[in-house]
Image 1 (cartoon, rainbow, N blue to C red):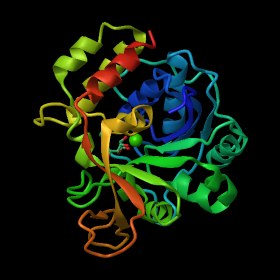
Image 2 (cartoon, rainbow, N blue to C red; image 1 turned 180 degrees about the horizontal axis):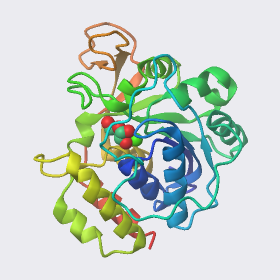
Image 3 (cartoon, rainbow, N blue to C red; image 1 turned 30 degrees about the vertical axis):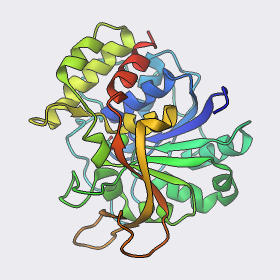
Image 4 (spheres, protein in one colour; image 1 turned 90 degrees about the horizontal axis):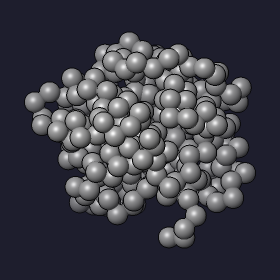
Length: 307
Ligand code: RIB
Ligand code: CA
């Protein structure tokens, strides 16, 4: 890979693990975070947008523009936010309210502007429901064609985390996910199968805590987020694993296979990953099947490097 940093846009719904993912990107010289766009998901859009700005500004990166996007799924009615991330979407941490507003540009248009004006093809990292990405692909096909690829945190080969079948980001807007998976874009899916193999332990979190302002914030994010992941020996920092795949591609093992999104009533939001090729359908997604144990140290070290 050439030495120049990979330009990325992160579309997110901060969210404790989204915040960790943003800091991992900012601490990694392999990537250049050009913009952050927000979508409703873990919390309503006004909160996810404010949270993205709060995190960026806390680590001194108020230069990174934030644009807000979809405030509800494409088709179904908005769902009540859960309590995994608290009422604000970033409960449990002490950050001031946002000191700036999002840019006027809609998230979908900022992704397009960034993709079409970049000196190098942009990688879009989507770590919330895929509503903005689906609208972007529909509204800006030429900009979508200019993307290097799309890396999402979402889906699962196996069990879900919102229902037995569905992972939250896909469940949050299955129609959008189906539109993205059938868009022809080069999509990489980082699902629960790998994020639950990369659990961040309490001991690792205590080692991270004293390593600077960003590290302290990260440790406090984990303190809160771990509450919703009891009894599994650690906390899955889902969204950071997706960013790590761009920072250090060999940290994940990928399989190219066909993935269908169930938009029906029973297993709504399930990603049907045809790992064995039994459907005979063309592969359309690179699915993560394994993660290197180096992930947790990579994430901690890069966040600590922010000072
Ligand atoms: O299922 C995990 C995903 O849902 C993560 O992106 C987390 O932030 C929540 O949005
Ligand atoms: Ca998220």
